[in-house]
Length: 210
Image 1 (cartoon, helix red, strand yellow):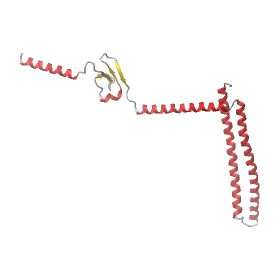
Image 2: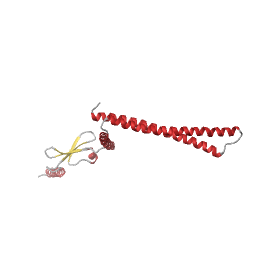
Image 3: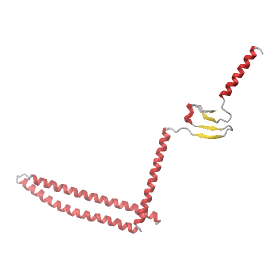
Image 4: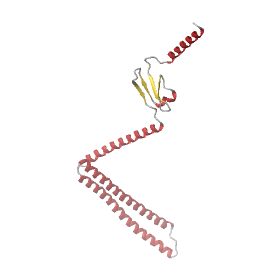
């Protein structure tokens, strides 16, 4: 064998050895991924730069045995968290609604019961309002007398005493407090009307009496 033939033979053996060393075993799984250019590539391991993009694992017959989805972005994770929170909130609202419906049906046997209860609560507040209005009238009458006495003293060139001024201010403050009380009770009456209107509507839906 010439020196040239020996050299070629040695190079051939070395090339074969390198190919065998670099090739995966016959039964090894193959990983396939998509590169930055959108081209599908396969090998015995996914390059680090493509590890987060998802890949498939194929057996020696070319069948997919595993599929890893691409890692989710921060925006996708945040959207999933928001959707889960909204779903939990909706579930809680549905549960509260079912509980309220049960209380409504257990408390009232008919729509008339709702109306009677509503009117009773409003009438109770009316009685409180009338009582406070009567008290306000007395306070205003006393205030008018006190103011008149203070005005008479000023016309006589006398200065009203400090106690008289304090009493006048105190009565005015009491009138304002009682008027605020009445305003609150009237607002409470409106809330009762609105709440019972919704309850009556829901009661009709549950009973199927629209």
